[in-house]
Amino acid sequence: MITIVRSRPRPRFAVLGAGHGGHALAGYLGLLGYPVRLYTHTPAKAEAISQRGGIRLEGAVEGFGPVEASLDLAEVLGGADIVMDTHPAHLHRQMAQEYAPWLEDGQVLVLNPGRTGGALEVARVLEERAAARVLVAEAQTFLFASRMLEPGRARVFGMKRSVSLAALPAVLTPRVLALLRHALPQFTGAESVLETSLYNIGGIFHPTLTLLNAGRIEDTGGDYEFYHGGATPGVGRVLEQLDQERVAVAAALGVTVPSAREWLWEVYGAAGGDLQDAIRKNVAYAGIKAPGTLDHRYLEEDIPASLVPMASLGQYLGVPTPGMDSMIALASIIHSTDYRASGRTVARLGLEGLSPDEIRRLVLEGRTVREAIS
Image 1 (cartoon, rainbow, N blue to C red):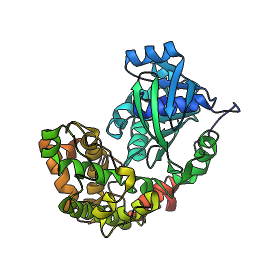
Image 2: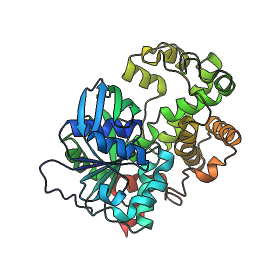
Image 3: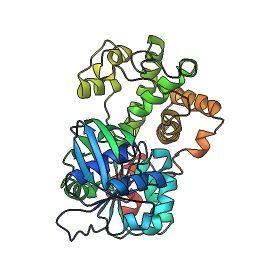
Image 4: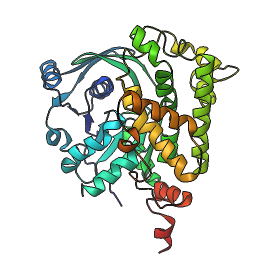
């Protein structure tokens, strides 16, 4: 059993990654008065933030948050109670290999977000590396909608009222929430990392809308509305197919997740006769431009860290995923990359050979049915 040790009245945070999300999160925590160190591999970012003494936030959150920025993982992780990894999900494995030697017993590591299978992948890497005993958790999505304007300065467009989170195993989720809620009460408990992993609407929307509008993106440089312009009736039918596959894979694991249409209504109050109609009626999507290039995280992250693990689970559980398979194949051709070879699979997540009941027992209690009986 992992014991969370915290001697200070206010937890000390380490934020990994100084991109759009890392800037917002580190600045916000600093603004709230929490000790926070930020890791970046970019010298210019570390220097700019150090010269400013922190990060200036604008927009939905206004103020200056003191932040210590460093290029040294050991320095950033040393003495931290909570480690918030904000790197894109396809970098989780690489980053876990890099920070594994510097983790300390009792720390909490949160992936923001985990996409599909993030906590399982990282926990396996840390086990292979014989890292310190830390508690790994994943968020279903990122807390902020934000953009880094320049090193040391970020704009926050909005902050979600709630973000579900699960620890691995889920019996320890309350401990993580109790520690996180000192600063971030928006986090709520999910049933398990299966729920956070398969409640992944972005993994359906992002790559499908990108791939089925690839010609338009390359021709216009993304000069059109990504959702309202890209979700044509035909594209909408493909989105419906992939979303049905996602829900079916979750059901095969005994997990109930909302459909994309239900999610649009719950989160945005957007309703429509079908998914395409609901997307176009979502006023929150108005004005959001498409990516300017196909070399974008909507493919580089969401294919290997969202669609590949969902499709791999589908194949393992006997759930057909023809829509997902098509998107994976198209992205692999466009990027000249075998995403099935590099992405998260059942084997890489450590689930091969386990039944659905054993997978559920693993994520809930940290052991399989066979281990519990023996």
